[in-house]
Length: 302
Ligand SMILES: Cc1cc2nc3c(=O)[nH]c(=O)nc-3n(C[C@H](O)[C@H](O)[C@H](O)COP(=O)(O)OP(=O)(O)OC[C@H]3O[C@@H](n4cnc5c(N)ncnc54)[C@H](O)[C@@H]3O)c2cc1C
Image 1 (cartoon, rainbow, N blue to C red):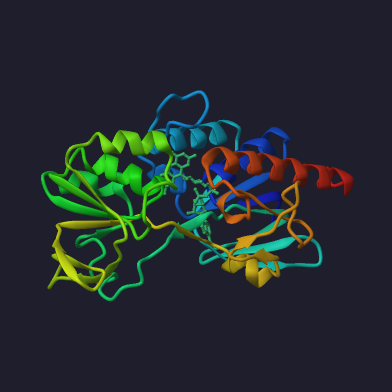
Image 2 (cartoon, protein in one colour):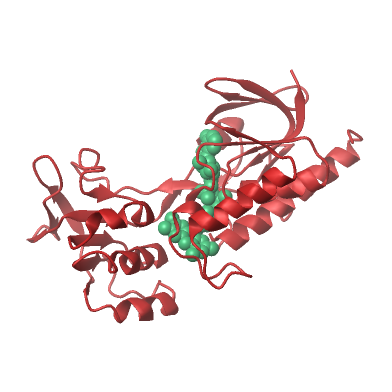
């Protein structure tokens, strides 16, 4: 079996930037990703990535992918289900294949957090959704709710307000001070948006699809759709099994993006960095690739 210098797990901003740096160091690089573009591909408008005043997540991540491909990075679609540490290097398993690597970069990002309410799974795709960018257009002239109070929720509400008749933004906090002021100001100008604070969704009600929600176990609100934007849960199961140290739910890395397991690096939303954004994911990806390269040189593999 061929042994790659570096295998990167995850094809979001962190993984693709790591790949780009790794390829430019002439390392034999493979990226395995479940969803090319990662969560960033779901952002409907990105206004804080330098050099683009505004760009859609889909377009930005297409450029990342094109850039990586232009450098000869090998990209494989698939889900890694196991990472085994061997005497020298690692064995990475997907459901279909196995790959060998000298170094591994974990860039698996995170998944959307669920409300954990009864009927949530049943109504998924039937009124319940986790991606405004993907589904906003289905709610033209409808009444929708967005659950959450941070940037992702504000941005989702802003997009939805351009399609839906009415948008309720439903947040358990007392105000929206955790959101970026620029996004909040923009949303406040939308006449079809209703802000609801101190409000917790306690029930999802409907027969075959979502028809209404219960708030604070007190009152009901009729809706055609509910967009859940309450944050993310990092994908750390593989890392845990490998013995990688965590802080809370996130991977602990040093300033070179090294984990406590030799030869394993981590980058992006999966790490304990304080700002989960595209630019920080990219920066961590670049450092991780550089560190892998330095280690391989020290080990005289290159
Ligand atoms: C709606 C929304 C809007 C946002 N807007 C902005 C914005 O305007 N500006 C900004 O800077 N940030 C924004 N963000 C945050 C930004 O998207 C993330 O910080 C960024 O995507 C993190 O990059 P990442 O590479 O660490 O993880 P991700 O983008 O989550 O990528 C992780 C990758 O790992 C893959 N993966 C996971 N598990 C496995 C496995 N077992 N095997 C193989 N592959 C796996 C996933 O499929 C994916 O390809 C937004 C996020 C959302 C949800």
